[in-house]
Length: 355
Ligand code: KG4
Ligand code: ZN
Image 1 (cartoon, rainbow, N blue to C red):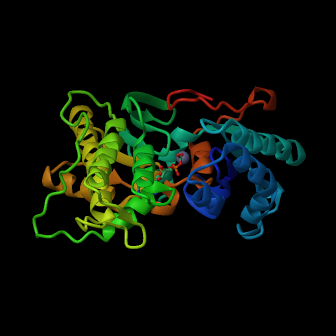
Image 2 (cartoon, rainbow, N blue to C red; image 1 turned 45 degrees about the vertical axis):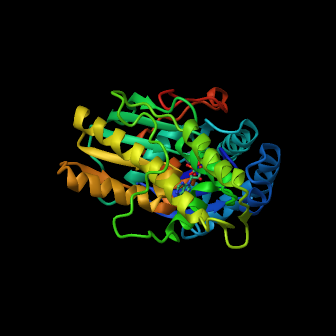
Image 3 (cartoon, rainbow, N blue to C red; image 1 turned 90 degrees about the vertical axis):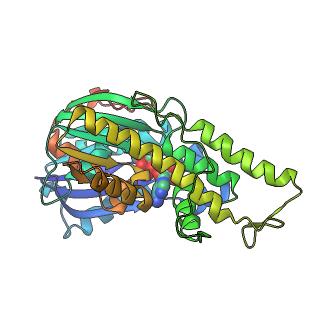
């Protein structure tokens, strides 16, 4: 079964063709990365305008790079209906409906947050149920138990900022470019520890020892701000060329490494607490932040250290950030086409909302 996925929830315009939910035939992502870097974030109105221009060429490229597939060879169209930016979502939803009408193919509406988890199904050997999934994206941080396809129970999530947001906002405070996750990761990789067992423990680990599966990341951003203010109050200035505070020679790379470590520690500890409580067969990471190599590494180290018998999965980094391949994969495993007049964009969907 060949499904065309369309994804336009944030500022990416993405289309992909996936066979039987597991095999990518094409995966095209166009993003306005240059514009994001220039303005330090996504400007909804401009993102939607760019998506109107890109969506048809991106769909055409997805078909032509999938062995020049003709539309009649598709079985259906899957499209993200939410959550996301309303103007952006509408571009994908209206495109999918128009193509459905022209090509006489059914449309499967997709919840973007649940679909992120299906990046783990794009694989030769499939995850097992019950599975525990940590979804960490730019706007959401959720821990869910999946008993089966379509059976999702929310067990915890962030009370304020999402993990990706903590990366993005801290990066801005450190003068690092948007998106903050990859730029903090790159700066952190340049940090040279002054001693072999040097501990990165300057920043707090919010809620790490609380007996629940909730997270809070807004205080972390404030703690990063305090650190930079302390330096400024001592009369130091950030030399933007070498990314170092002039007097103490404290490198931005140290603060980037501290930020990354604090976020990663909380995510790993609380997720593995949930593994111990719910004893799932598979543990699945998903969402843009799961592309972070320190997060992946620390999960694996902790799982080994605690001898947890769990099938631990992280998608290929390219499949963690927004793309349409997991949209199509979700649709294969949750094959529920809807009448066109029942499909509409919904910016506020949560991970447990059915669509
Ligand atoms: O899932 P995603 O691509 O889009 C949303 O649905 O939000 O996630 C985007 C988020 C951004 O906050 C970005 O900074 C973060 O994922 N991100 C990363 C990395 N790559 C992307 N965070 C940490 N490390 C990375 N390598
Ligand atoms: Zn996403």
